[in-house]
Image (cartoon, rainbow, N blue to C red; front, side):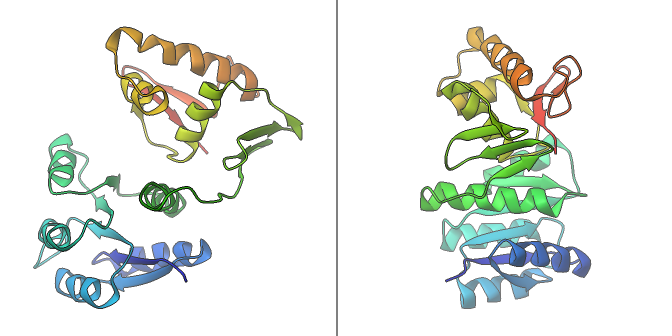
Amino acid sequence: MKKRILVVDDEQEIVASVSDYLREAGYRPIPAFDGESALSAFEADEPQLVILDLGLPGITGIDVAHEVRRRSQVPIIMLTARAQEIDRILGFEIGADDYITKPFSPRELVLRVQALLRRVSGPVVEAPVAIGDLVIDLSGREVKREGEPVDLTPTEFDLLAFLVRRPNRVFTRLQLLKEVQGYSTPALVRNIDNHVMNLRRKIEPDPAAPTIIKTVYGVGYKLVF
């Protein structure tokens, strides 16, 4: 049975585009264009995940999130045109699991959906991800470049897999250290630089001018594709 995803936004074009991508990925989208219809659909269809615009007219996205969280622990991905840190903090405080800022890539949003559902439902078989001549088999923990195996250490693969599942999203070194290696000791954050350097040497066409794992100066790293 296809997992049901509630898609809530007052912009019909966004709902239509996101719904198309979700269908292609094997999900059943449930569209809603305001807070009232969103809550009705949530009650009637019991979705496995909610994609929710915070800037809804009338019953706001914040109100919807509060009510959804009161009824359920279903994952929530916030859509927001606001890039202010305080807005993201507010969203997380009301129980959202992830956020994406408009304008966004529907493909990236689907990857976020897959990652969240994987976390709440356990491991699933994932399709390989291709980035140019690089193919990453997330389920088989294998990487090939131009058809030839790439020899990665477990930590290098875990770091690459973490970033692949969250493309175009910037992470600090401390965040990566915690997510990939399970600890968040500030004195060890530069370990991530070494792993990134090794990864670039193995997967980038030109490690001196990386196009896959980008440095965001003063912040950390992101994977681009």
